[in-house]
Image (cartoon, rainbow, N blue to C red; front, top):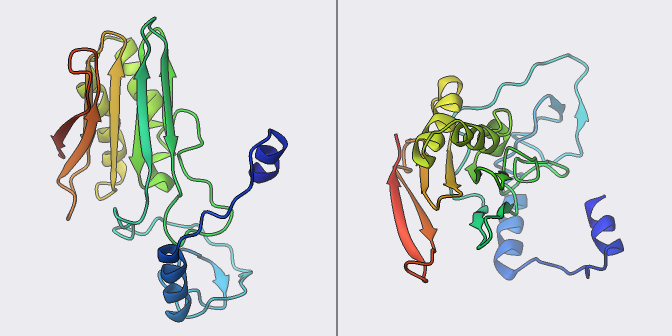
Length: 215
């Protein structure tokens, strides 16, 4: 388990629950664990908190359209270009609210949540990880920049590839190359028409807020 590995590496285990998160969880339990992302289980997850057992009938899951709340997660993605040209990209997330225990989203998947190559640049993604991780948008964006695409174009192309199959998905990608150019792109959907991101560089030496219109 990731927790055991972290403890073996010297990290201290601590409870990150807050009064707010505990209150949200308590309310979720009182609402029969709704919303609930479990599928193909018994008892009915839309009416019960379980415990659940898999149904015998084989079923191919389909991702529910419009079921992901853009406000239900807290992913932070960063792309950093060092003074000597080193590139690093990383994401930090608590995952989607009310996620199923054991769910692995896109953040820890190389090329999905983030990707970097010091000869090219880096990219990071945020949004509906269950969809986005299937397309490795961060890896795709970096490879596009390797082939000469500007960061904004690379980000838009990565979003477009996902949008072709999931037009209503929630997501955004940020990109930066070793020349210091940067850009971002996002998929437009109800309640999500712009994506804000911060930029710091030697010219400003302080954070600047930028906003990109979703498409």
